[in-house]
Image 1 (cartoon, protein in one colour):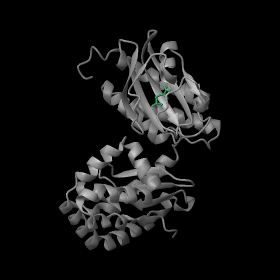
Image 2 (cartoon, rainbow, N blue to C red):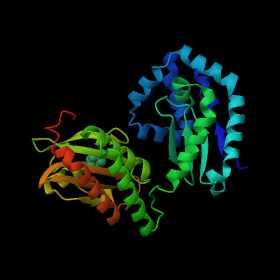
Image 3 (spheres, rainbow, N blue to C red):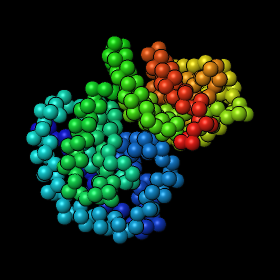
Image 4 (spheres, helix red, strand yellow):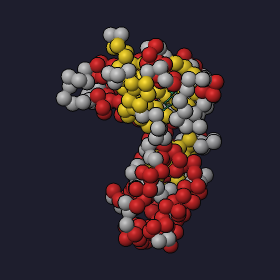
Length: 326
Ligand code: SME
């Protein structure tokens, strides 16, 4: 069987050879070693450098010592059992599609797993630190199997730039249904969080997804988002793509942000952007802003789909002042 499961946990334990005040130095080097995975880990969890530092230092030396102890005692057996479990359901996982691998990579203990798109395939990143702090390392085989099953379902739903328009339309329709079901019983804040998370998760080329809400003084305020933290947390109407979309109440689809004069850069990685206003009875309530790290990536299908997403959240936003829940 192709080796689809790899353990990189041991790369993390040299942290124990550093004095605690130098852990951040270790982390910087370690982060370079697992750059693609750990960058996406930070992006999905909206972590700034400062927040990463805080999370790292929230662990005591004793805590990492104990993790290392469990790991040395159990990892051999855990790995063997994980391989056995994966082998037993290889048909169900359609392993021969060769579209994913599973990596155990120690991170900051805030997410159990993450699907990370790399150049050719997906890596299912599993964080032993999370597993150890939330249960125990002998749960790894079952967590890996569950993650691989989740990935297989995800792989048939994920929206990529490689799909035909027909397939893309189908998948966006399905995603709209999932989002609509998931948010139906949620309050306004939770709705926005769920929408941002699901869009980020299921659409491969949405690299920053966030909601700005309109304040009374013609200013946009950043609410919930998934992606790298941005300095543009308040934007006056008229300023940047977001501000222009707010003042004109029109969608802005920008295939190449480098050609825009009135543009506020959140990240040098951003190449294209779409901003869709959230309107209710002609009033602007806020907007959905999506950045992509690829050029010319949003099309009419995205435009229409995101318009429908905004229509879904508009009523809850319109009544936010009246609801206790918000
Ligand atoms: N690029 C936007 C600012 C918001 S960030 O993309 C998150 C603009 O030009 O308004």
